[in-house]
Each structure stands twice: as structure tokens, then as C-alpha cells.
Length: 396
Image 1 (cartoon, rainbow, N blue to C red):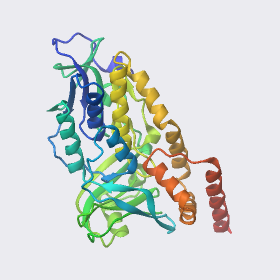
Image 2: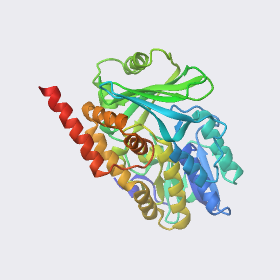
Image 3: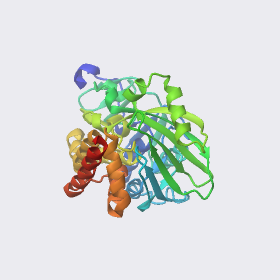
Image 4: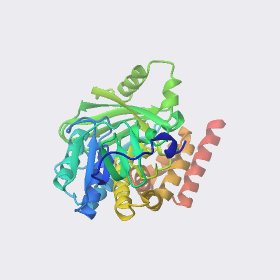
């Protein structure tokens, strides 16, 4: 279905034009607003969200080193400096193989209620107009996009999340179930000195895993996620499955404030926009299919969308597509392939076993799962051979 067939093409009754209007004020939308105002302070930039801030958002709350790099590019290098870094990462594979090591660069865990509100405040301080508004329809009039008959912009950045209304309005459907995960997130009490991020995988219903990401204040973000088709095949109510498996994998960390959310994985990503509308973050299906990480992708894609809108206001989509390809193309092709291989828990066992023996492999897997890393052919071959040997032994 085309953009033309999904929105009305007529001339609106208003005069003022925004240079960039952004729908959704999470990390992707705020990054777009911040970058546009950073590059061209004289631009009229509008940031819309249906909620007031601060507000909670179900998420793992993890901000990897690549995300901090994006914050620095946006002129906010110290935005989360008051949160203690979590230097160590422990991963338990579906077969029980464990690796625990210090990451090459530490991660942070910052509740989205705090992180998103700080980004919005920074955008407002940079001159961005922030408004509470729920978008319902779009009109393209040849030189811009009109939102709900009242707001007109040369470029619209759609950063309104997994259930993006704007994506639907431009004729792009939601991600297929096979490319969608579902997770439940809560908070639990942990020792205040806990500084280890834990990912505990489960063979039942694989791919599936629980996590515990300590914030540094005696609490941790905890949760459990799995592919949506696997949840539907479990034969029990979703709440029962998600909550039950979280409690099973993290029995010492009873969770409170549990909320579920969908994750549109990058394996099913749509085209990144239509006409003068650019999709960023979850709305663009930019969730790492191996780890569920999305904040780095959100900050990066929001920044790139703003750059395209500023540098090529007449045809931002072509430039945006090229920028995404340059920044994430090889990485996304890597994760597409790895996501298919990872359907076998034995492959993940082999990868984690290799990482436990070789620190450089551990660091590389972190780069792939939390950043924009790729896998060199020799390493892929080594993991594949280990996987094959394990499969042959199991078949005897």
C-alpha cells in the first residue's frame, strides 16, 4: 500500500511551517529533536508526545557504551554520569554454559522515567517546542506534511514506538508475529553493591531469557522475554507464562511493577519511511533480535533522521536510507543471519562456550548484541565447528 493511498492529499488551511516535526519523545524522537536543533539552531523543531514527562516506559533500561557515544554526539556527554556504571556481564546459555567477564566499556542502567525526561528537558532547553499531542491523521500537500489538520512540517520523524500510529498512517503495517518478541519488565531489590548485568537464557520456548540489570541504588530492572509465536504456543495465558518463567529463572529477585511490552525485531524491519515521513527507533523495527536492545538504535536512528531532514529537506528519505545503510547495514545483515542460527540453542551454547574461553570473542559478542558489531568469518567458522561437534556428540 502506498503513502498516497493512505493519507489525504489536499491543501490544508494554515500558514506556519515547522522545519521538523517529531512524533514520539522517547530516545529516538528526542535524539532527532536534539540533533536538528544542534545542527541548525534557527530551525523550528516540534516534538510531540501523547504523554507528559516524566513517565514510565517498560524497557530493560540498559544504556550501552554505544548509546553513551550517541549522547556525546548530541552534546550531552554527562547526561547519565550520576548513575553508577555496571562493568561486568554474566551470560548463561540455554544449555547452562556460563561466561562472566568485565565488558571492554561499561554499561549503565537508567530507568526510562529518568532517562527520557532528561532528554526531553535537554531538547526543550535547546529551543525545541515540546507539546502533548496524540496524532490521528496525516495530510501530504506537496511541500510538507500536515498533522491532524493543524500542524504543518517539511519533514516528520515518526518515533512513536512499536505500535506506531504514524507508520500505519503511511501504509506500513506492524511487524509480523515471527519478527516480534514480547517481554515483561519489573523491578526487584538487590544488594546495593551488585554491579553485574545478568542474562539467563532458557531452553524451554527458546529463544527466551531473563535479565537482571542493577541500577546502583539497591534495585535492579528485571524481566523475561520470548518470541511472540513461542508464547502463543505455550498453551497458557501470556501473563502466567511470562511472570512464571521470570520467577523460575530469577527466584531470588521477586519482581514488582511488572509491565509487558512488544519488541519489533530488526529481522522484520519495514522500509524506513515514505515521502517526507521517516521512521526511527522502535517504529522502524530497530530492536536487536539477539538481545532485545533498542536504545542505541533509537538514539542513532533519531540522530540520522534529523541529519537527513536538515541536509536534504526536499528528499530526506533517500538520504536517511543511505545514512542508515552506512551506519548499520553490515551489522543488521550480521544479526539477521545470527538470529536464524540462534533458533538452535546449541548454536548459542557454542558461542557462549567460545566466549568463555576467549575474552576477545566475549567483547565481540557484546559489540554485536549491544552495539553495531559484525562477526569476522574465521570466528563464525570456529563457532560453527564447535556447534557441529556438539551436535555430533549429542547424536551418538
